[in-house]
Length: 221
Image 1 (cartoon, rainbow, N blue to C red):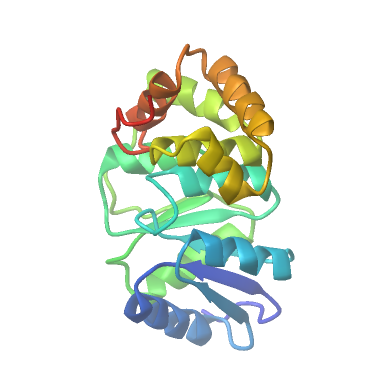
Image 2 (image 1 turned 30 degrees about the vertical axis):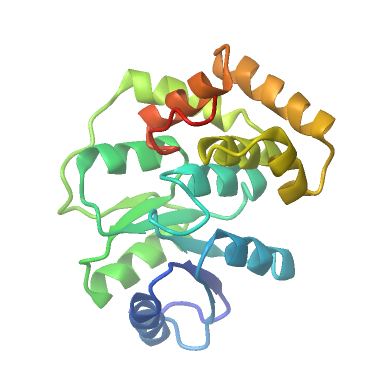
């Protein structure tokens, strides 16, 4: 299956061997395509700053700098025009459902062969939503969908703050990492609590963890 070569795809995965295999599969399917690689979320953010005309991001769920679905949530908030497909070793129905609830354009298992990967990428680049037909049916989960909608209302910076809260960072540490004032961080935290309908930082992290957008943690009190 040969696709249009004038396409830019970013592969975000912390395993060089898998990135290499995926690059090879895409190169065969899309001769001449520009393929960039990122080993963690910071690398991915830098790549998007340098080239915001990317046509597709292939995102691993288990990647340094992102907790669960937080990387997907951040990308959908920061770069809504760029489709993001999850490429994961997990084939759990709940993860598929949650990924799609958070705005993923597709879910590709890492076990997929090169033909199936090319099929998925072609469909997503054509504006379709693609889920591997061999994966379990996802069904509906009203609770997950409700939290997904709340999380989707966060701004990109608020998503970054929530990710750092989930890591147990204090306001001053978050301010240093984001190069903003503590007052700005406090304003972001207040907005996060309001949008998620919770009363504390810990509750915000627990709410995000319920849908895999953060690790289970009580250290952000």
